Image (cartoon, rainbow, N blue to C red):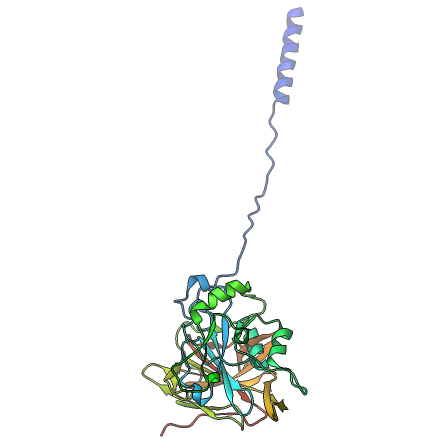
Length: 350
């Protein structure tokens, strides 16, 4: 009987041990994989769309250089080397240019003649987050807000030749007055920007962005072999002719053959302001950048477009409102007055 009891207790103990050693089912866990997406880095020239762009210049600010356009200044030194030429009226019926370079380390050694700041040009440079290079500027008076005051008001980083420095000089080869001989030593721009401790990274929230076609496309269905741009009733006319051999629009108006892949003409409301100047008066012109209609011309054709400045950025669309894509290459941007008889003509080729 004692033997039986001992065996029974042993059996109960064994069952208890096996019951306690039963393993729990492992917890089911769900792995969460976090995917971080980043905006694709654009490796092409943001002003021309060209792929052969300096890697070190990607994401960096451009420079915008004010260049004279009077007859004694022509041909301008380094004309045709910038990514974009913007041209419009300033005062007294004369026009002036703003040259934009996406890579400020690749500006020619001699650029000019350099001229002074005007409000509309300061604001245009700001649309591209550019560092503004000029020699002098207009001052506020009699209801007119000057170039200097606009630089300060808009918070634009600028380099002024009036302050002197190694960046600026005078050419001695031309027998013209000194105001037509001021030059910028483009190869020294990176050094001066570094010395001034300017921000060099683009502010992506405030920079205008151009969109480009993958390959050359017609601008529209209407032919445009010749294009004449008159900024206002007071100015001369810029004349371009399409060359089917290289697919570019050429002009010799600056006493040099200058060519562009794209012509972009923006019609804008303008205002004339007459102020005292020395012992007489001068009449300045300001662009209001209100937006409206314009023209995109490329590959021998043209299209009517729309444009606007929104949150400080230039936007281009087709007539339906879709984003405008332009062809890769250098562009000319002309500003014509919509209310002071600015016009664009497309003469037919005889």
